[in-house]
Length: 147
Image 1 (cartoon, rainbow, N blue to C red):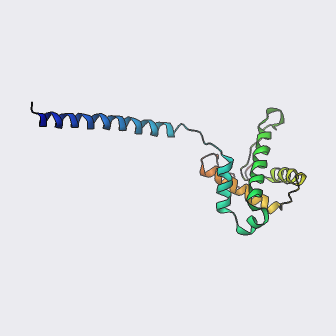
Image 2 (cartoon, rainbow, N blue to C red):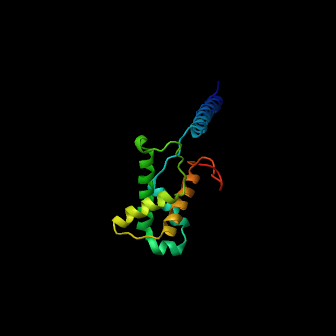
Image 3 (tube, rainbow, N blue to C red):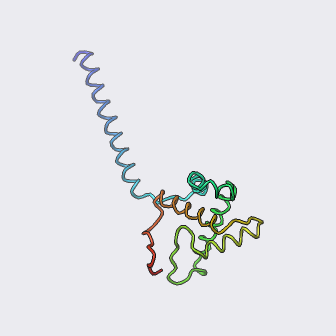
């Protein structure tokens, strides 16, 4: 066997091995993507909200207010997750229902932050948009659905 032929066969073998490794990596990534759970990151939720918020609302609550609202929303939802506080048949609705808005507003007022219920509702709706964008929402609740 000549050295030229050996070089060609060696290169072909190397290409086949690299191709097999690449194919295995791609198949594993595709398989894992279907099994991954959505990950909620407050910084990402805040960034999503800031990118989509109405400028007038942003003028009222500012960047720090958006973060505060989203943090209190997470706190509220964590409280609902505690088994001793959970109501029978409880279904959490992304975007903040009246109870969530009232709770968050009350907690923010205790800290000296007075945001309108409309501003709170907008930020919570944007948080729901973020949840949808990461695949963390269930079916959409339509008006008239029983909760």
